[in-house]
Length: 112
Image (cartoon, rainbow, N blue to C red; front, side, top):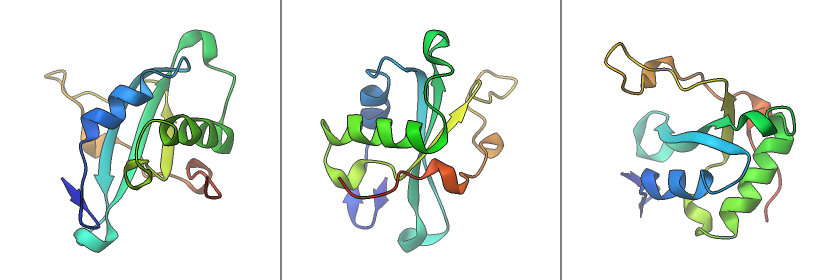
């Protein structure tokens, strides 16, 4: 997929996210209309032992810092949404339509 002219491989971002000890499962999708409006959003399910550690802006900032250390800045998602579980279709596949839109607190603030 391309966003703002850059080739993006969501699987690479997911692989790096799941390396973080707080993340049990993750998915990265592009949301928005048209090429200029598309933004990456990372949906994460935290590991049970880390469930209460980071919320909202803290989680977004922690995961953004983690990804910035191992990925180019242009593929680090600006938004991170914490979910209890990833929504699945009856066939067991990710239900992209059931993913919630990120709220303001999902966005990591400041540049690294």
